[in-house]
Structures are given as C-alpha cells and as structure tokens.
Image 1: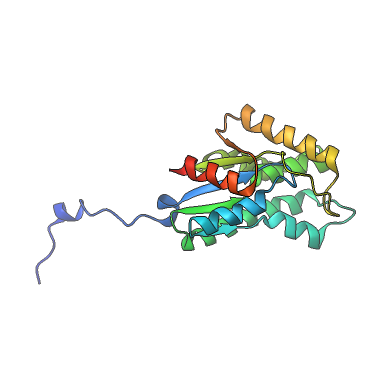
Image 2: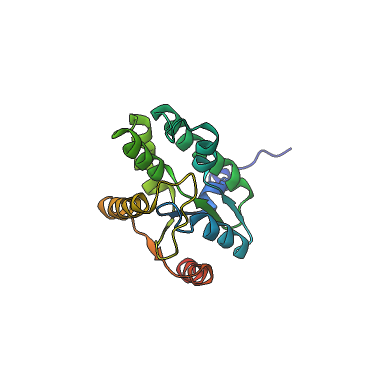
Length: 191
C-alpha cells in the first residue's frame, strides 16, 4: 500500500462546519412587534428551520410575580444559544432566530437594573454571532396579553433596543408593514 504524499495532504481542506456555511439571521424588537411570526414565515419561505424565543416559554413556566432571577436570565441566554447550536445542524442556508442574548440582557436590566457578568458577555458576543439582524418595527397593533407589560413598556423596550443596536454599532435592517411586506424586505436583504 502506498503512503500518501505529505505535501498532497496539506492541500486537503477540512469540511466546513454548519456554523461556517449557514447564515444566522436574528429578529429583534420589543414584545408584540411580530418577531415570532416573521421568524416562522421566513423559515418557511427559505425552506429551513427556525429557533423560537426560549425565554418566552421559560418565563411563562417559571416566573414569580412576573420576574425571573439573574441566574434564570443567564440560563435563558445560555439555553437559547445551545438550541441555536443544535438547530443549525438541520438548517438550509439560513437559520432564523427569534431574539437573542442582547434582549435577555435588556430584561435583566429592566428587572434588576444590572445583569450577571456572564450574561453581559453573552450579550456582547451576540454582535458577532449573527450575519443579519432585523429589527421589527412597532408599526403593528400592540397585543397586550397577560405576559406582556403594557403599551408604555412596549414603547420603552423598542426605544432601548434601537438605541442599543445603534450604540453598539450593530448593523440592522428595519422591517415594517405586514408580514408579506416584511418577508419581501427580508428576501431583498438576503439576496
């Protein structure tokens, strides 16, 4: 049996990992700005998978007096990222993600006026984690369900998120209008 030429072996490139070939697309915005709806619609349109907002489900099942502890908020961010990392293995060109650690960090500030250092670090890393950031505008009617904090908080959250993206220099595309209009904007952006 012949041994392969070592010089030839150096030219063989390792296979790309899914995280290197799949573009991660995140939807941000205040509660009731259509993130979940457009995330699912985009995944369906592009024939790929999406990641639901883990924090919403966790909050509904674990909140006490409409609050979570700093440790619970850190867990949400960590688990959301772990779900993304598992789901990307089934993605087709894009992985669409409903919210991220930056949003969870914002909830920590809102609840406790501070966040654990580990959560701050995850929020900072979210700047490099996604290839595309879409900010859902608050131009759709606000749906004040039991888990939301009212229209005033909705407006405050939207302003905070927009300002934070700008302050951090995170490039984003604003999505406006109906689901169909927003989907058209996503398709144009991702071309």
